[in-house]
Structure formats: structure tokens, C-alpha cells
Length: 498
Image (cartoon, rainbow, N blue to C red; front, side, top):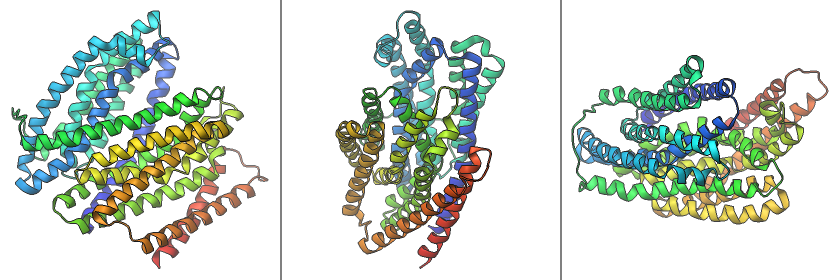
């Protein structure tokens, strides 16, 4: 177990490094789109069409890669690694059939889908969006097929190929935007198809290296396929419910002060940056380990891996929360305040960021707790918990937005996410007794003390710099943040060593 966790953390570091690189390339891609194509009805049509063409495929792809891993590890434990290839080929043919059917359905219903997603589009803008959606539909096929190979790789604790595939994906876009941008948004959508194809192709050699060989197998009656189907639908519904949460937030934000949707989006982007790069990396490598231990009926090892992963995640989430709460305004100012994004927008966005940050620990824990349930072949509990969270979020949105505006929407998300965390922990504790009241309260107090000392250090250093003539907002963030991190690490080392 120890060597496995050490390899996992090494893989997590790799995912984090390439995740940062991918974020940089994505930013360059977005900047080039704005520079080479501009902000016009064509780009609006492109972004809407891309969502319309890929949203369902992304949800299905995530459901496939998540649901497959526990099943593949179960097959490995009971029948050997070589039997996983048969299962992958069987499922591969099924998802190819499914994705082609979805593409045909998307082609036929494209005007309806566009009208739902973009009610304000008329005339040429509507026509262009429909045409772009039809062009982009093959992207969904590559997304879904890639998900099968990603799950196969993860069942061997192999993460590098999947992580690097996003780099290749963005490089294809960059080549088009630098050398072939004269073809406009239609060429950009074709570049998206090529990028997705390259991304899929890039994970196949690694799969072959780990024993994959293509065979024509199609057996709908296979017991493992049936088991996967039972897991798959609740996973997809749960993912869809979480997407609904975002729609609900934006819908209520549209009734508030003009700009509320944008302020909420910018604040959420910062939170997702932390979750997407750091927390997701740890959860990704932890998932197959927990699945493997569950299939081996090593419940104590499962609990040990989960506790180590949770402690690592909180060790990142807690200081990140403190930094985002204490330095929310200078962070937003550094990232966004320029042009039309003025001081008022900075103030409102930083307010939303503060209240989002309060739920960062809960958001991080939901990711790992959900995967623990999936590892235990339970996709119903996360789905139900997500539904409860959406209802709580809706009620809290309505109440808090009246008194706090956009800040209330962010706070509602943090509270409802914490509620989902509690529900998932409560369910796990009934099954495998993950809670030790004395130990967990003691750990919680230690985190609170370390976080408090960190906050004091950051605010002291930041306020001390007010009278000093320092050019550059980044310096005004880095120095207090580094001082806070040193205080946190020193306190945590002292407390957790005892």
C-alpha cells in the first residue's frame, strides 16, 4: 500500500505539472481566438455550437471513464488482466454505436438544440450556429471513445498518456490559429475535430503497451456489461444534476444587478482553477487504488488510502481557502481588472470569490467521497446526494440572494456543497466506519488553528506593505501568501507531528 501511494503521489505531481501547462496553452488558445477571429456573432455562434455538439458526449464520456474503472479492476481481480481487453472491446463497440446514433440525432435536432441554448439567436447567427453544430458533432465520437481507453489506462494506474493528450489537443488548435486562421470559425470547428482525433490517437499506443489488442466482440448479455449499465446511468444523472446547479445559479444571477452572471463566472473560474489542477489530480490517482482495494475486500487498506488522500486534499484546500479569502480583492484585481472590468467589478467578484472559497474544502471532499462511492460500485448515493444539494442550493439561492446579492449565490453553493459532503460521509460511515469522533475533531481543530495563524500572518504582512512603494500587484499577493504558507506549514508540522 505504501509503495502504491508513493507512486500515486508521483503521478499526481505529473498531472499537476501538465495540468498547469495545459491551462497556459488553453489561455493562449482563447487569446488567439479573440485576436485572430475577434468577438463577433461568429464567435458567439462557434462557442454555442461547440457546447451544443459536445455537452452530452462529455457527460457520457465522464460517466464511462468513471464507471469502467471499478468494473475493470473487478475483472482483473477475479479473472486476470487479459480479460479486461475483452470487456474493453465489447464496450468499445457499444459506445461507437451509441455515439453514431447520438451524432445522427444531433444532426436532425440541431435547430431545436440551438434554439434551446441560444433563444436570442436569429437570422444568420442562428443559421451559422446550426451549421457549426452539425460540423462539430463528430467531436462527440472521439470524446466517448477516448473515455474507454482512459478508463483502461487508469485501471493500470497509468495517467501520463491521458494527461499529455490534452497538450496535443491544444497544440492542434494553436497550429490552426497561427497558420490557418483565414478559414474562420468553420475552420476552427474542423480544427476541433482534428484535435479530438489526435487526442484519442495519442492514448492508443499506451493502451497497446499495456496489453490492449483490438478484437470484434459485441455481447450485450455480458454480466460485466450489465453491472456497468447499472452504475452508468446514476453517474450520468448525477453529473447532469451538477450541471443543472450551474444553470440555476446563472438563472437567479440574471435577476440581480447587471453583471452578476459575469462576476459569478469569474469568481467560479478561480475556484475551478484550484480544484481542476490540484484536487482533481489527487482524486484521479486515488480512484483506481480505492477501487482495487475494495475489489480485493481490503476494507482497512481502502480506508487508509481514503484517509491519506483526504488529508492531502485538505492540506491543499485549507491554505488555498485562506489565501482566497484574505487576498480575494488583490487576486481578482491582478487577474481581471483592466479595460471595462473596473473597481466595482473587482469588488463584486472578490466578494463572490470569498464566499465560494469558504466551500472549497467541501467541494474538494465531495470529489473524493463521490469517487469512493463509485469505487464501492455505488452510484445511487452520490446521485441522490447531488439532487439534495441542488434543491438546497435553489432554496438558499432564493433566500440569500435577496439579502446578499451575488455573494449570496456563492454562499449558497458553499453551504449546499457542505451538506452534500455531510450526506456522503454519513453514508460511508454506516458502511465502513470512516469516522473516529475523537481523532477527527482533534484533526479539525488542528486545521482550524493552522488556518487561523496563516490568515493572521497574511493580513499582517499585506497591511504592513500598504505604506511601502511596491510596483506590481503580483508582488503584493506573493509576499503575504508566502508568509502565510510558511506560517501554515510551520504550525501544521508542529501540530500534526504530535
